[in-house]
Amino acid sequence: MAKILLIEDEASIRRVLNKILTEESKNYEVTDAEDGLQGMELVKNEDFDLILCDIKMPKMDGVEVLEAVKKIKPEIPVVMISGHGDLDTAVNTMKIGAFDYISKPPDLNRLLNTVRNALDRKELVVENTRLKKKVSKNYQMIGESQEIHTIKDMIEKVAHTDARVLITGPNGTGKELVAHWLHQKSDRSKGPMVEVNCAAIPSELIESELFGHVKGAFTSANKDRAGKFEAANKGTIFLDEIGDMSLSAQAKVFKSTTRE
Image (cartoon, rainbow, N blue to C red):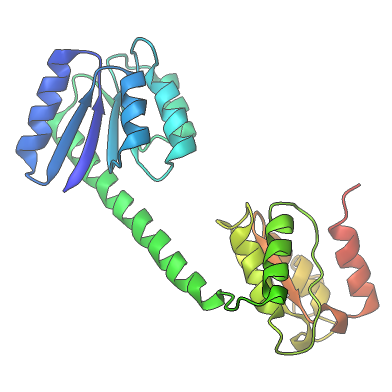
């Protein structure tokens, strides 16, 4: 059963939209809210699969509702509805994160197609999140010793910063595991986790691998290529066995990651 929240200050329009949706599918459960404040209270206390929201409303308008929803429950698709065919407003709501924008009176087919597409997207987002959590279980830290707790506490402290982290230890002690935990606990966890085995890349190619190159930079450079640092943008890059990198390459890495 898909739960839909309809936020609309005009009672007649609420009745019409509610009837359209419930008659379209027995799998739609529609909850009404007569203004933005009431709608946000429902969003905070209940789980919805889709929000249909008017823009021009008293107390709290639709744009404010959209901004608030994207902060607390960004996975919920929000479809904006307005009786004012304002292109600038439509573009603005889409930039904020609205799934779509529909003008009043809504075209029946367009409304129903948009609702179906939005619900399909919600399912994909939920499934993607579930799969990511499933994959992340491969990097669980198991153990209750004081040393494990010390490492976990250190990860919690440093993960939410932008500091460079040097992970040391003999082979097999879990340096890669720590790197993945740092990424998963960080504010960059939704971004990519890029791993580079520095020991496996020839010294003459390591700089190109990390920083990329333009076409013609060297003999076999037949096209532009982005480096690993660019691929890790807004995420985390893990330089495994960085000590095996040449000193000149290490210096360039240090310089590229140092803020003025």
